[in-house]
Structure formats: structure tokens, C-alpha cells
Length: 358
Image 1 (cartoon, rainbow, N blue to C red):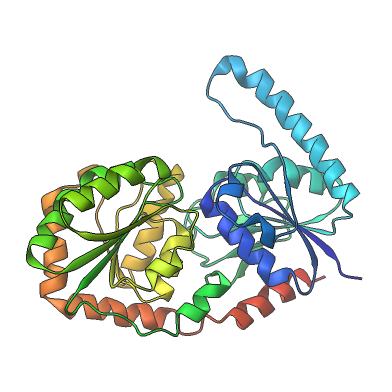
Image 2 (cartoon, rainbow, N blue to C red; image 1 turned 90 degrees about the vertical axis):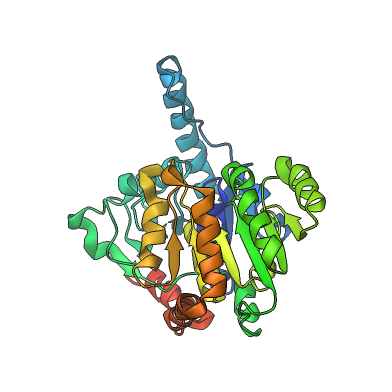
């Protein structure tokens, strides 16, 4: 009989997409149940998973709501206990987010083995709290900020986990900037209004000099405004939201401007698309900047900080990339070398071997 694994995910794309990848890695060898809240259901096709939706406790800085938060948190633990017992769960995998805390506490109380996943270069707050309870934590690097030294032996290194379809996309021809610029703009799972408001001038300036097509990912509320902008400026474009398979657009791009979520950067890097990272300045513990610096140190990207962002600087950088391709081609080569050994089968074996450890 297959052992039963519960994968618990937070509600953002940065949590639920890696969780869905773990699901695909484990579904042949384990009986897997996917747990997320209503927000998380926006980022995946639920028909592909055995899942349950759970209400997650809402956090608030309002001191008058603290008693209610604690009550709801306690209720979430009780609900999680019943869910784990009723589904005979043997193993819990948490991919971060505050929703993972009550589920993990319930698993600890029931003696269930807990595994965590940290894709960022800064240990998330939920994982920092839960690290004491877990057997192992899957990470891409041992150099993680805020990671308690006494728990370093729990780190289990794996290559960057990627959605399975991306490996098929990697067989396509690696596009370079030649006759046409295919610019991909990625605002992340929440969409980046900052991008929508501040990249237009640079796009217009590039379009004056070069043939360009823009693939622009944004939140659903901004789609109409962006379509109007590109139409009025006669710029070829495809506008889409985060719900769609973004790698279908990544494989068409030869340069990208992006936020710095771990999954997005991994997919861009694997598909050999050099990128300009503009980390979200309000990301918790500044983890997006650290994610971007990880690639910059390997000479795989450029970084512009949102705090000091200037449209003229972005325009100049884009023109330099297009006109002087030495830096661009160097980064493409470094990205290609960086992911040479990343294979679905290798990662699959490592994850399963870890879960089978005594």
C-alpha cells in the first residue's frame, strides 16, 4: 500500500506552483493529497490534482483582532488534525506561507513526519518557525539568510524544481536578439502595477528603433489598460495573466524584465532567457533581492532596484543589451551552464530518496 503524503501550500503563486511540482514528482510512488486555500486555486488547474481547499487564518496588524486571530488559528489546528487523521496521512510537505503553520503543528501533535521546502535565499518566516519540527528542508543552497546554524544539518539540497512541461520546452531553439526583440514582462502572481506604470516609456523608446513584440503578464484588472496602450502605440503584443502557462511565453522570449520570485527566475534561467530583475521592494525580508543577487553573482542577469528606479536608466540598459551583445551572450552561456544537470528524473529520485530515509 502506498504511503499517503499531504502537500500543504500557501495561497500565492510562489507557494502553490512549487507545491504542484512536488505533487507531480510524488504521485506515482505515493498517494498524494494537495491542500491549499481559495487564493491558491487561482494558479493551478484543480482538475489535475487530488485536493482539498481549507480556509486559512487571516493575519492582521490590528491589535483588536488579535484574540480573533488566535481563536481562528486554534480552530485551523483542530481542523488540520481531523483532516490528517481522516485521510491517514503519513508524511506532510509544507511549501511555506502562514497557512502551513497550523497544518504542521497538527502533524507534529500526531507524530507525522514533516518536510519543508524553501526556494528563496532568505528563510521564510513560517519555515523559520517550523524548522525545529521538520525532519528535512529541501533547499537550493546552503547559503540561506536567517537560517539557524543549529538546524543546518536538516538542509537537503536539490536542483531547482520546475514544472514538467518546461523540460519539453527546453528542446526548442534558444532564441537570441537578432532581427526582432521578443520582450517578456513578468509581474508575478499578484501582477506588478509598478511595471505597468513605469515600463511603458522604455518600451516605446525601444519600439522606435527596433522591431519588437512584447509578452506582458499582469493582473486581470490591468489587462484592458495595457491592451489599449500597446494598440495606441502600434506595438505588437500578447497580454496575459498569471493563470496561464507562463513557460509558453518564456520560450518565445529572448530578453525579460521580471520580479524576482524564485520559481519565475528558475524557469527563465532554465529556458536560457537573460533577464533584468526588478525585485519587489516590499517582499518579506527582502527575499526577492537575495534571489536576484544569487543569479547576478553568477553573471546571469542584471538588477535594477525599485527604490532607485529610473525609466531612462532602464531604456539605456535595454539599448546597451541590444546593441552590444557581448554581455547578453555571456549571460546566455552562463545560464545554459548553470542548469546543465537539471533533469526531472534526477530531482525525482532525490526527493523520493529523502522521503524514504529512516
